[in-house]
Image (cartoon, rainbow, N blue to C red):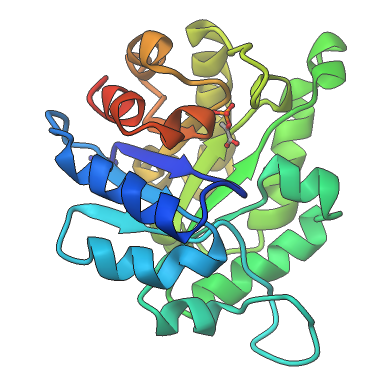
Length: 249
Ligand code: PEP
């Protein structure tokens, strides 16, 4: 049975004190679902966050990493550095990284390899822009993003890959994909995986939806058979909202 997962991407929000306060609030929430819960604070707060949550069932994860092991990459962080403070999961390929930091399928393929080599789990993000959807090209765009960054991997590697379909037009805009649009795309993604790796592998990969997911719409989106959870931006910054989404399963 594939895992249900809800991950909060805090982006460049919350200083150390705010991070610890939000973590305290999160720990006061009650979880009624079986979903795995993760939060991704900023790099500067990761270690303290990890320490604060190490006896809880909330996993602290990273928002990004570099593909090199170490070296002259000013301002960057490697997989080993993350592992050395207890971080085992990293978000890669977020549309904001692609848009503002020029991340490409090719550089992401290298990051994926580096993370897997260190035994990390990856939440791999991808999704079409509004123009792609308007022109009916969303399937081709998504298929290419997945193929270019992931299809050099062995089937076994997918044990450590979580996919996050995030239509760019829905991220932080308040506009959500309809549950049907999400289901159609998730089923298409699973079929794309099945064509390459076989149905058994495809059935085991969790595919999260991201894009203006909120307490009011999470239940309907998560009720779709190929939606295995969510990557949550804005609504993950309030403990009650985040847990309302976690408990939407
Ligand atoms: C995200 O950034 O991954 C995201 C889904 O953001 P939001 O929930 O704010 O749309």
